[in-house]
Structure formats: structure tokens, C-alpha cells
Length: 142
Image (cartoon, rainbow, N blue to C red; front, side, top):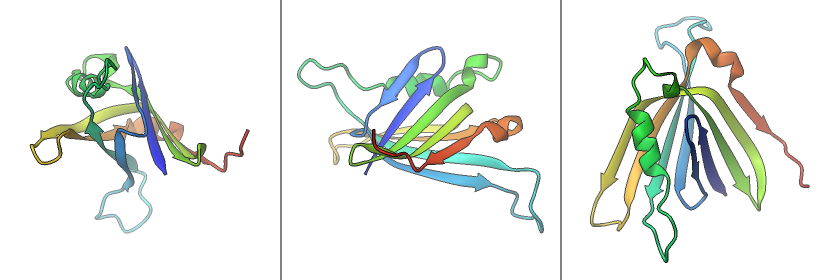
């Protein structure tokens, strides 16, 4: 099973299956609620590897994610379209589309142990646009 990440805004960011290690989706509902809350949000935590350029290939796009995390709220580019594809045997089995995503937290960790860096990206869908978040699955082969 593999994971692909595509982020579109002022620039396009593509991270292939070799980069993304884990994606965790969460429904963000107030914990003090005693009924289904209208204050619904979503969080997606993406963990991946920061790969170095090899044999003349370009380095990965993780530096672009780091720059996106620093875009101020006053700039409309802080909201971007994010698509996550879950792939199995070259077929997409799940596609998550977050059309108004913004960065809540971004970290990069570099250690001597792994030989590569690791990043974690926490994003949310803009709350007033929750109806536009999509989970799609059941794709058939072409």
C-alpha cells in the first residue's frame, strides 16, 4: 500500500509513494459535547521522509511544504487544495480531497540514525468549508 500527496496553490507540490509514510485522519469534535456537535472540524496528520537528490534527480518537494507552513493568514495562499491518494496494486483505493487546507503545524527532524530527515505536517480543512471535504473510494480498474 502506498500514499501520494499533491498540494496545489501558488505552486504545485507532489510527494510520491516513496516519501509518504503515514496519513492519519481525525474528526475534530469538542470533547465536552453530549450530542453531535455543529462545531465539526477535521485534522489530517501526514508523516513522511525528506529524501535527498540522487544521480542528478531533483530533490523532493518537502522544502515547498516548509515554505507553505510560513505563509501568513492574511495571504490567501495559506489555503491550498490537498489531495491524498491511497494506492494498492497501482489502483487508487481511497482519495481524500481537502480543498481549503491550511497548516496547523509543521516539523522537520534530522538525525544521524536514519540517514534522512522526517517531516510531520498537520493540516485542517477550513471550518466553514467542511462540506467540500471529500472521501472517495471504490475506484474500479481502468
